[in-house]
Length: 170
Image (cartoon, rainbow, N blue to C red; front, side, top):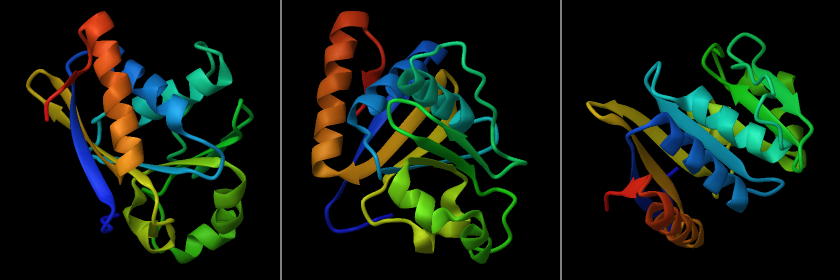
């Protein structure tokens, strides 16, 4: 989603704990009705990041969070009700109506892996994260509103000062 009020930031995630910290940081700014999209190649960390957010909001680090690749959607009752989608196996956005996506979007925090097939149905104020593998870990490019990006940058900078991770690259 690239709209006039869209801002971006790039975050280096050299270790798994940095991706977990990003997930926890995102969990602080996400609310009911928000939509978070996760894109990137296979193995880039989409499910891992989703899992860290869901576990944090569920207050359960041992919660089994499976990728919804075959079920298409997994629902979680957490501090915020969550719907974790995977659009990878969908052939058209029409299938989203069969899943009740339009209704779920208003009733839960939606985390969507492989969002491209349904991009026409996504709200304009999505938080979009593209994950990439790099030589030294991962990189997350985040697109969202100015407020979300500013808030994330502030929280990540605070965490970086405390833990030296994750480091902001721009």
